[in-house]
Length: 115
Length: 111
Image (cartoon, rainbow over all chains, first blue to last red; front, side, top):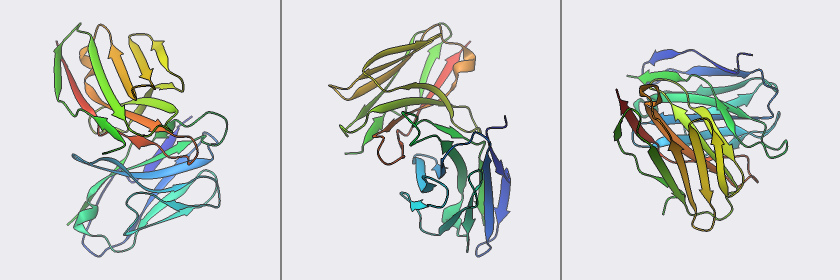
């Protein structure tokens, strides 16, 4: 099992450009999440999808959109990148809602720099 | 008051030391408690998971939860240089599928 995979690993964008971060999991998890991690700020939830077909805003959703393409895949889109979106982005998945299984499993991250 | 407070460190110990990492939380609804380990430039990796008060042991690692005082701890026995990482605590109330994370404690174990 690959677990949670993310592409790309690194990306540099100019202000105003758009891009989509891809995430896939092969653990048959219902729930998927997008976080950003910044120094001194910890992990902050951007969006999550409790199940296929649903998405909800997290703590810092502004400037982002998401798509739950199917049970395996959850993408994060930056429509018009800003320097404040320079960060490390992590995707995670969980069996939340399937018994007492609330732990999340993380991908390796995407390092994004917006100049 | 933040929902989960964690001392950011950094914490530096000699190899073989017993390490104690701690978090406090304010939300009584939290029922599920996790510790994650994050190596530099890697994703967080689940280390321990418990949903009850008391101790849970896994090798050199022990997670302790005290719901009455809203205090969770991770103990590492016989610490190794390979334990050098950032440790994050995380809690969940279970009803909304989300985790609340502490900001992490940076641990360095010196050979």
